[in-house]
Length: 211
Image 1 (tube, rainbow, N blue to C red):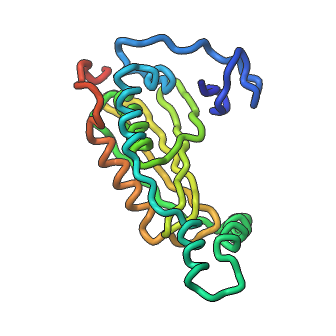
Image 2 (image 1 turned 180 degrees about the vertical axis):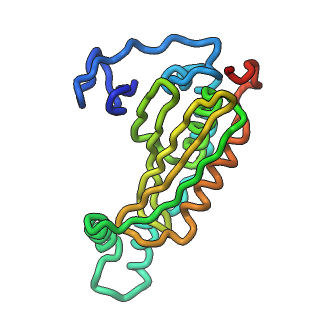
């Protein structure tokens, strides 16, 4: 369960992070495609099955840390590149250095189905969810943007908002402490929006878009 106030993982009656009262676990819903509640959607059996399928097939690429540790073995240097990266990223982040990209699209699908597709995409690409901020008209999902040979670790923020017809999805990558990511963000956003246009193994649509 996530706290709807601060987005932290929580259990019991009150959030241990901010003290906000927690709602009871969401019951199964027959109209999950038009539901805006992240918690309710991910507990639908068919949606959970699709998420698990993608999570199991996710391929973890080489991280920047792994790449740099390999470099240490082939480059004669008294300096640890991986240790240097761990120090340099937060240092440059404090100086305000960061990189990232933004993209937004309208999706011709109900908000609940769109949220499910987004979560399936995150599972598919090995981008674990860090927090969820729930609102009346949608939610904001913050996921880890894993490091790679192109860039250090960052965040992927995805806002999903219900429209009169369809859903508006906005996404941005944030990589602190680095000036360039050599196309990593652009590629990741292209993958996300390609996934959100597909069914991602979810059951066939049974509901029309909410009016």
